[in-house]
Length: 150
Ligand SMILES: [Zn+2]
Image (cartoon, rainbow, N blue to C red; front, side):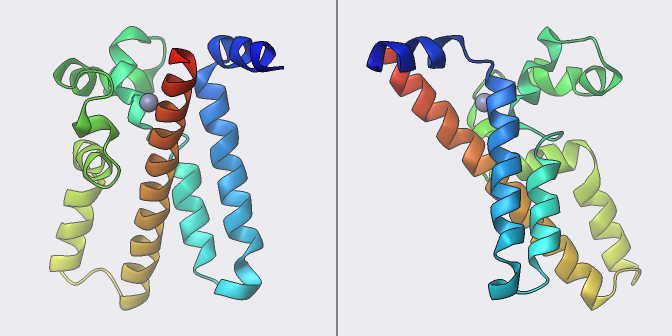
């Protein structure tokens, strides 16, 4: 059984596993909606945003096939794989959102009075969801790396 698990984790496609786990986390968040309230929706959307704005964009230079990965080419050339700037939840999330540039745009819209209080709340919960996606990603990276060393 352990050999089978070890074989599976060594051969599993990381991106696919990361993506399915995020879908499961988002589903769990939505399922908690009756208990937590409607803010689970922007949080779940934030988690699902992690499918596209992933810490592994630091590998974009090795996967140049899509326009999205080409956009992240400079980012991936500046930050090595699994560097804290790409894999530390919260900090790396902000780094990617500055690179995108969602954070500067949101700050400008807020400073110019174009963001309502509701918009601020929605953005905050979306950001919390995206940070959670990054946390889950890093936990999976660490777990799989640990499992491979056993
Ligand atoms: Zn990773």
